[in-house]
Image (cartoon, rainbow, N blue to C red; front, side):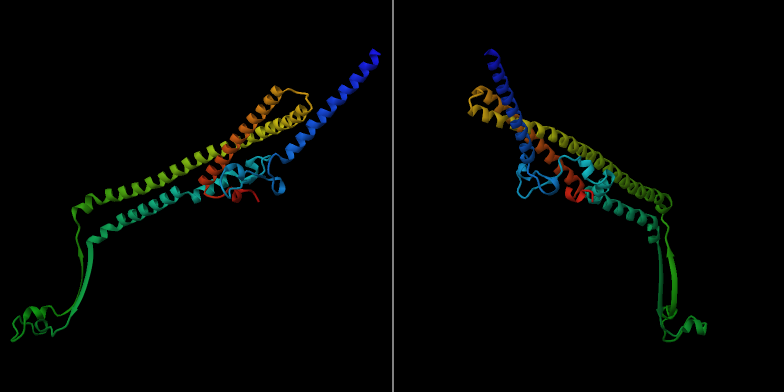
Length: 277
């Protein structure tokens, strides 16, 4: 009699364990399939969690962002081309380059040419006399064509011009170096946010797995408490564990979205346009 009861107990216990195990596996599969909102081609929509209207981001969370996006060097070129600071510095460099070119030829402002023409009889020249009855001698001298060049060379042009040209060139070179500094700073910021975006994506994948497992445990606990197999205290513990896992995944998801938007702001282009073809 004891053997039969023991056998029956063993069979029942094994059946209960297998049933619970199959239930957990089924809920895990169900949660993995519907725990996130998926679009076409397995893309994950994070728009509803960002709290912004019409803000839906489609990325494959299971694939590294570095693989989904174009190479970093190409992204850096796009960021330089769209950066307002770089554009402003380009205009400053162009302005200082023009100032340098003007400084080199500014010495020509001291050279002037002139030409004029007046009509008359040129009586003094033709008659060889300086006194002509009824005629103005000075007026007769002013008759005819005259062409000439007026050159004035102040001492400043001899001793100060080269320093002014050198100063203009140094200002231009400084603007070029400033542009390189801005590009280096942009690259440093872009590397930082790019790596943060990759890191938060990996953390998000881990937290989503934890959230799905906690949700599966919660679904099992809900079924078990209805049958009276677990206590309310155990149910509260499992519920609290799911709430913690859900809160952690939402926090990481928010950080991931924030990094994505920071990345877009630095590059100056939506991330959808930066994906590989």
